[in-house]
Length: 159
Image 1 (cartoon, rainbow, N blue to C red):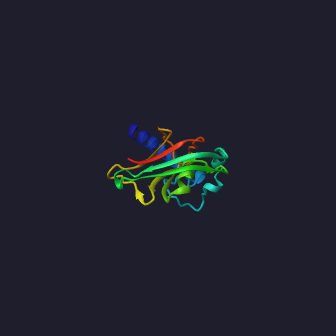
Image 2: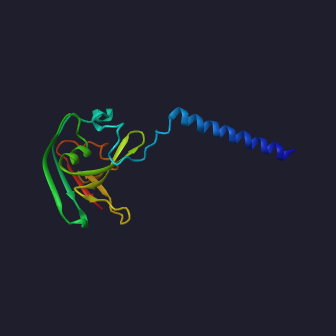
Image 3: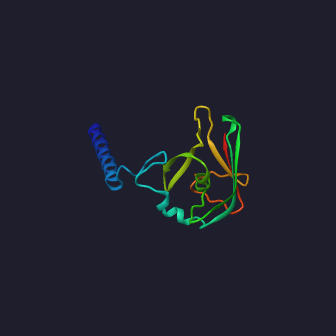
């Protein structure tokens, strides 16, 4: 009798879990999580993202420095960068002057992770990634999630 009761409980529990999973798929769909799109997604555009409009309308006198590390040992410097129309994030500063590659992670908001700058690509196997600082402080946000204030120094490093 106990085995039958336990079996019935397990079957009932399995059915409830299955119904919850199916209900979530039907309600949320299967497209609610897109781990990355490598900067390409037909459903999404930074130009129309309402999050972009939460950033300052303009910033001025930004300095952008890119250190390529051991990849080629060079540093590039761009000065007196002025940005307008809410295109004022770290991503926008970099995108204005460089050929960039990036991945978009989809969580609460799309988050841009820079994977390459001017042909120098990060290398996970060798633990080399692109990171940035603003006025000497590391920022642990995606490039599109942070807007520097005017007169800031933005440095990108290949670690």
